[in-house]
Structures are given as C-alpha cells and as structure tokens.
Image (cartoon, rainbow, N blue to C red; front, side, top):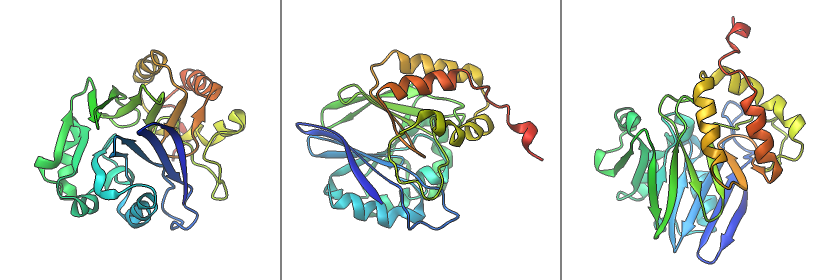
Length: 248
C-alpha cells in the first residue's frame, strides 16, 4: 500500500493509505485515513477485516498504534468497519464514533456498547487531543445514516463514499490528475448507489459553507485545489438514483 502525508503543521497531521496492489481481486480497494493531534490518533473508516493486518502494519511505521484512541465509522458497510473487532482486540478502550442509527447493526460485529459514542443525525463534534473536528450529515449518500468529517485546520473534508471512484486495477495515483477522465469511474457508482437528489443538494450546500482544500473519499482518488469545486459542480448536475434502468 502507498502511504502519504496529506497535511502536517506542528502537532497536527493527516495521513492516507491506499492503492493496495496485493489485495485479493474480489476485494474493493479502499483508502484509510489517520488524523493525529497532540500525539492522539483517530482512524477514519478503517476498512474490512481482510485488510486489518496491512493497515495496522503500515500505519504503525509512522504512528504508535497504542495512541490511536478512536475510530470514526461513516456508515455501516463491511468495507468501512468490519475490521472493528480486531482494532478493539488491540485496544479494548477504543472509542468508536458512528451514526446513532447504525448502533444496533454494528454491534453485530461483536462491538460492545461501552465502546460506542453515537452521533445524532444532525452531526456534531469529535475532539481529538484538544482539536475539534466537525461531523457533517451526509444521509442517503449512500447510506440512510451517513456522516462526513471536516477538519477546519487542515481544510480537509472526509467524504466517505461521496466522490468514490472504481478505478482500474493498474491505477496508482492517490490524487485526481485529470478530472474529465476521472468522471467515467465515478458516474455509475453515484447514480446506482445514491438515491436522493434532495440529500445531495443539502450535502453540497454544507461543503460549500466550508473552506475545503482537499476532499477525500473512501474509494478512488483525492480531489484537491480546483478539483474540489469541479467535483461539487459535477455532482450537483448528476441525476442520482437513475441507474436502475440499466440493471436487469
């Protein structure tokens, strides 16, 4: 897997790990993000049980995993959070921030309620080492209980499945390099898996309220600079829930 630092200033940083060329063919490629602040760590959507060992091994080269105090789960999918029981085995005191609506589902992974900090539908704040991260509603994009995370210091917006792209297996880029070409890898996914144009417009309005320099999805490449605005405009004009006619 590739590991790259997205931001670092003083005791605050973001790292991403992705493009696992050695993953099994049937396993979707995922991006994993680690936020550090004052020596404390927060993992965003740490991934499936099948890649726990490589995620833990790679991040441990750059950060003491004993200092990862929390995990954020944007929604309930197994590619997001099925590794959670293994992370809790490594640290039984691990805090799990997740949408309130999915608490009774994620406990089926063997997670105990005392580890969980439910986040209400309207979002909220996660404090990491004295630094506040904003939790932004992203419902129905694609999960009915879905949340994003914005960091006002780094100006990074973690979007989960929003902005996801199903890239070719030989793709190695962590960042979007040609937006127009990149849309072919995003369109079907968004039209098929996201059902609500109303929810889409609400989320876009929330993103546009904020100063965003990077928009980081769970799958595919990261948008930065002008490509953030390009993605929002593209997404705004995409008719969600419209791919069903192609399914037989």
